[in-house]
Image (cartoon, rainbow, N blue to C red; front, side):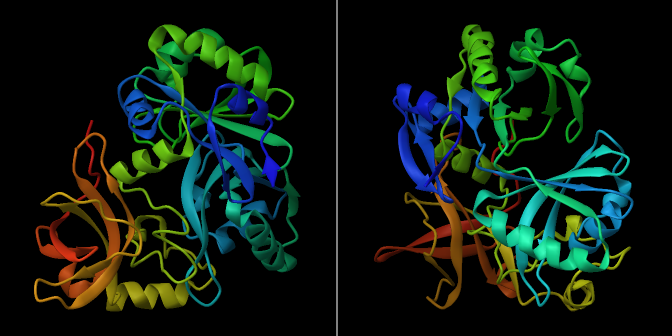
Length: 361
């Protein structure tokens, strides 16, 4: 099993470590609810160095990225980032990712840890007709997510640049925590603001220690993967392997906003037809009306007991104090305000189909 460069730090902090995407990762430190609320109210730091990083360079870099991703990367200026996905040749999603334009002809693709090898092989195969330069930096770089409403104020002393001047989904290559060149990106998967910091493995322990020191007066805590999951679910953000995978399309997953038919891309014709004809099922968000916790794989039903879908992600929301979830249902049952049933053990628990996000700051 792989480890991140901060594995010894997590062990020393008493983190509960679990296998995740081929890595030994911290799932919790103080407990999921405490960590979750710390990020919502103050700030927390996550080690997400298991994520993969690909550098795509050269005059054909944009052509390759435009072909393998659904969003329109031609809109990216240097210093901007974009959420996108890699469509599968014959339907489904290879992965979701963030694309950074680092220089005029240099792009950084950040992909999910469990999909690094698969994504690389997929992009490399399509690159045969483009010839862009590709480098897999996944084993060389670390990634920290510093998230929460106090993140900007707490981290400002660690950089000479004005962190308030980095808008959402923008980034700077600048000094941070005594390291000259790191990527400071106003991205993250929590919905509570903050930054993601990309640096070399040899630098990350110094960055972690200085982040913890700078955040101490603001109540910073280390945050594990369990709270990362509850935070992203309160925002309704898709998780690869749960809400999207090789059997789901971006259209039915509600990712039409990152699927741009102003260009040709892998499987674009089929996805365009699906959008025009409407998919047979949709990913919906729901809140339980009674007590209960929806879990992945639980059946979704009509009031009469007919199965219409399954839960893909579910939890007890620490902020809302109720069960929330995402799941695919037949299109006829996907309207907001409608009632569906969640089969929790031997009981059908009513739930309302709602808009996203669940949590609003």
